[in-house]
Length: 304
Image 1 (spheres, rainbow, N blue to C red):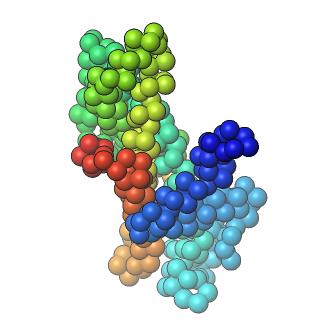
Image 2 (image 1 turned 45 degrees about the vertical axis):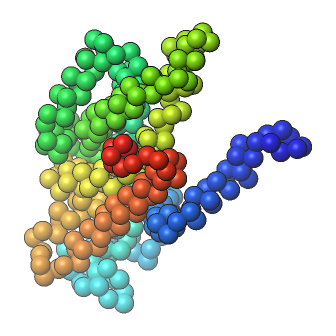
Image 3 (image 1 turned 90 degrees about the vertical axis):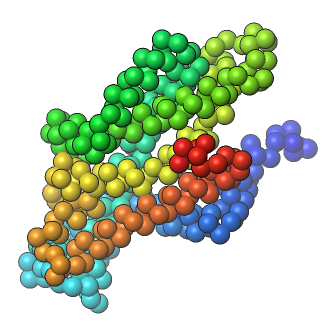
């Protein structure tokens, strides 16, 4: 508690910043993860701001064609080379950062909300409600993830919004099963029994006792899943069901490079490298967050 205000330090902006700094410097892995993710987020935010302002943050327009400069290898003018119609690859990789991340975040927000809600209800209520919810999740999990996502996206005609809906439908069951198993173990603890004895309603127990205990698990899982969602979205774009031309989405860029391999290697290497960097960065961040939020939580218990 601070003497002047009576507010605990972690509840103040300075206290929150101190906690963030403590986590960011807690280990070499955390430092590396925060550095990679921070760089990716800064580039994505600047790229989105440039898109909204109808400009670009590199020396070239990511959508402007220049046939005279087509398929130029990386050099002093075009650091990542150019594509088959002369568009600068660096500009397109940078412009595609906010597209790939926004799809990933949208998918995980929807999947986490739906899955956590379903898992809380199934684990806490139990009985026939639990059975119905788990059979629905089993129905989604019975199909290979990418095939199910492709089928859903294709039924909506393809594009970024159908891709988001399709991937959210694929990922939410994992959150439901993860949270359900955690809630089943937590609801037998003494603090839940104490809440019942004190007259707490089911709603109060779920939102005030159980949810605060499972949200770190959701955050860790969602952070770890960022890379997987980007890979899945890139896979759908690779199949022609995700981003449509001329959108500079990383998976679509790799798909466009197929007819020029292996001679024009840079067309696939740089967007593929961006996907790999995001996947590595967020996986490292998820592992570091798990250790920071609950050091006693093993990887097997966390479901990651």
